[in-house]
Length: 562
Image 1 (spheres, helix red, strand yellow):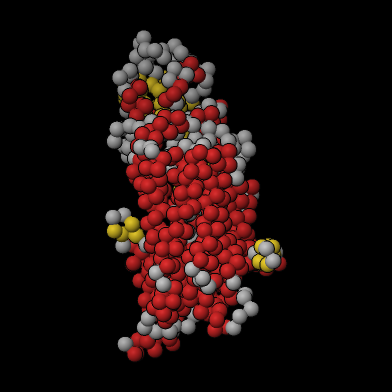
Image 2: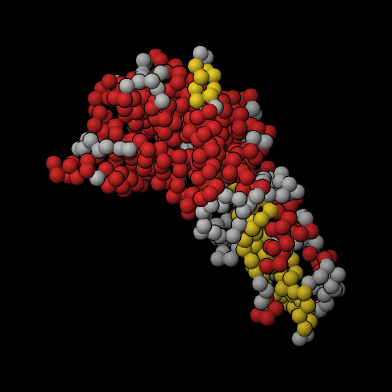
């Protein structure tokens, strides 16, 4: 054991990788659906290893990793951030601000009541409000305090200790409040309310298996019999017979010749038509009315699937149903719509927003034409624009150092951390205006955010490990109960403000509460208990606001308490 201790002290970089590995193992364990997650797992792993060895950690390495993480988070939510400020009448945004500000004020009151130092107070915020990045901004703020090096190191260790104490209830509390306690306080039945909202949005539930075949959209060929409803009709007239099903004729075979479909082309008995549509529509609508035939040559049409970033103002704010009525949307189908990092349910009433990613399916020429009207096709890339990445982090950090915010008699620096987060938001947003600007592959962004935060937190845990037990004894059990208050107070206040002042739909309100605390598991719990995915519509506008404010609170509470 002595040899192992000396080994970890001599090679601290290997201790970090060990902590990350154990952290992901711990974070992956789930009890009744709840798990700590890899970030908190890495914190506990670092603290555990710190019990055996005082592993030295380099502050520059921690800062480098944390800034990469912050830029990655900002870059990810940037395309949706400004849209969130104007979407849904600002209700989810206002809710997120109310929850975050209430959480900060409650934490300040509890910290002063318990006489916590700046480190414990910062960990109280990051753990109780389940925002691990606040540990990084708090650490930077502590290191800027005019204190002796040993005292600053002690306070930084206290951040990790308090976060570890408060995080478990913080996560469990948000999950249970959003899915169990919140609905009871509102006096609602989650499945019933979700069904009402689905009907308002035009979401249709179907029996399992009806629309989950291996091809969601299909192209099939049918023989037009004599006296059939479409016999003698033009293609345009035939297609409007079933407008709600969006069935489109792509080609027509007449004898040995194949004709491309045009609106004025008239069909007659004996023709074979290639019809595209949703599989269930083809089966339910055309199946009983027409004879399906095999015609490989007729069906040999190039079909494209493309992810398109919405940048065009013409599409911004339009519902899916309205967009589908446009001339350029003929023969075009929407397979998925992604907002931020979450996939939205497909329903006619869902509004398309700039920054959304639409997965379009249809004939190759149709998809290419529609993409020009919607935005730009996102072509896979493996190259990272390191020029923009490096310069943006530098400029963001510079602004963070130069900009100060007056709080009472103090002036608190915005910090390099918050400056970098804002730089990521700006670059991410600019992608919706200039899609080729600052391109970073999704895999690279995922590595920046996952490894950056996990490694930073693991190093923080390694630093706190040797003093963990003594720090727990110093803080006392009051820290645990204080953390419970900090977790629940913003949830309760946000619930009633959202319901009775903002008059939000209860399902969107519960999703918004989870988003304000950046707790995806809370949203998932609402979806699970309601049997519907619609809570994501409240979550997505709130989560960017939650990330920005809660991360900033790490700096603010250190300034207030110190």
